Length: 397
Ligand SMILES: Cc1ncc(COP(=O)(O)O)c(C=O)c1O
Image (cartoon, rainbow, N blue to C red; front, side, top):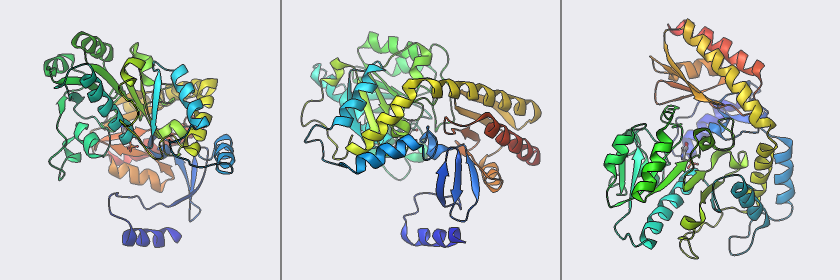
């Protein structure tokens, strides 16, 4: 069993930052992952909402191979053609005017935090540096983004945190308005909270935040690291809610599994980043952006988005049927292919049992089973998971 020996070596050589499941994946295709011992799994995690085109999509493999054969990295001292092309695709298909590339979601949010502070300073608001964030939010693990994150469990042991983040309840416009002071420069919010439990915004919440920001002369930042790039069935989640931010962050699925992050902003705000203000050695390098172009082009063709909407509705209906049959399901929620069931019991045991039966699913916020499969997932694959969940939930009751 190669898995067992890999687990032993992992314990010996890797820092114990992750509580890993006893699986060592080796190959993937579409929604199927095969581990080093030949066991197959249907993947409803997609590398945590990353592999939107599925595993090993031929066009992505080809683009990465082609680019690797020409040039991998030069730094941002020079002009990088695929980076420019990817930026154009993002700008032409979003609210934004300019893009900054980096390598992860946390870095994209760091960039957004710095840009919001810098913009306020450039406006002559020297003391405006505070950012209103939401309880149960998740924005990353760097010191600033973990400070922005509205979950105490991620703060433990890292004091003093970065100052300047005020947390208020999600979906509460009054609380947000009440937290605004002369020192506030921005509001940072996930349109749908992912790690916090797939928490949906109430209908006019995001629009209300934008109105408040306009009235109080502060910026609205959407963290679409988890829900952007087709996850909800539209290219960006904000498109569902008739609202636009000043700044948006992306990462995860933007390059289909190749590390990348991006921060997009409207021109007026983007102008606050001038040469020397912010940078990243690897940000937007040849390989990452060549991969990102493939993902964006596939999204813009539209069929995959339509497919994600269609399968998402089917999946959700199936989860609702499970809710009718099992009292342990409190609520079904989500949009497109970010779906969740809130349980009355901890979900960790169900994740392990599903794994034994060949399904990868994820539990977040203790009692929420979250489903974020590759967008190429088929209805038959969803049905297979629903059948297994039906059995497992019956056992759990
Ligand atoms: C909404 C959101 N923002 C930021 C991050 C951090 O991204 P990364 O792990 O790439 O730094 C995540 C990761 O789960 C996320 O879900």
